[in-house]
Amino acid sequence: MRPFQSRPVGNFLGKDADLTELLGDAPPRTEPLVPGGYKIVGGSTYGECLAELIKNSSASHPVLDGKLRPLTVFETATARIQYPELLELGLDTCTGVAYSSNGKFKLIPISRELCSLPEDFNPSGLQINYSSISSGVELERDNTYGRLLSLNEVLAHRFWLAGFENNLSKLTEYRDLVFNKLAERQNKSVQEVKGMGVWLLDIPQSDELRGVWLSSININSSVSCDYGLDGDARFLLGKPPSSGVST
Figure 1: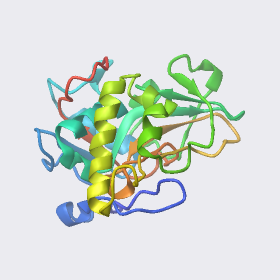
Figure 2: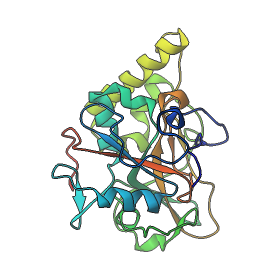
Figure 3: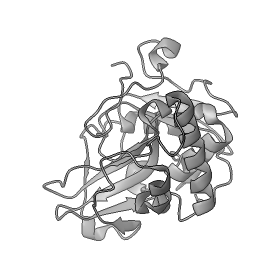
């Protein structure tokens, strides 16, 4: 079993929270590392991590079809607002991005396909029929992807708005948390720093589904929508603060 590694976002690498120092070389198994009663569930692939999550019993954690599901982007970000220490960890979600071979893509807040991946699933992406994906918000590629964003750009970014289900108040709160942390670390003003970039998969040859990973503050709290499902994964286990997201 391989150790946790720094996860790439786009074309650059950043160092995530040093979980190997806390947990040793193996991916974590439901360790009580974080505040607010949350635990970290980990695995060497998304499917393995999901299987580990489902093994747990929790009356408060969100479920889908009677089984525990990973938190969404919105739920994870809302947990970070309540417990800013969670910004130190990169976290996977059940939010997915469906890519079409013609360049279109959809953000799916709760991806049933991701929530039902088998434990032994090992390809980097799940092959899908894009036209059959009825849920989610279809978005367009533009020059706001693949780079870090300014303070003002975040609130106008369609990906972040869709990920927060158009809850502008909560998105503003999360953005302010992230940018204040970045400004403090970089000894700059919030207007000078950049963060919360969104990285997409290059247009695939065939329709494909990937998960959305929220990076740590060490990687500017960006999101990677191109990381392979065959890479190491970690989920939050616990009751998310009220976010309005249905189970």
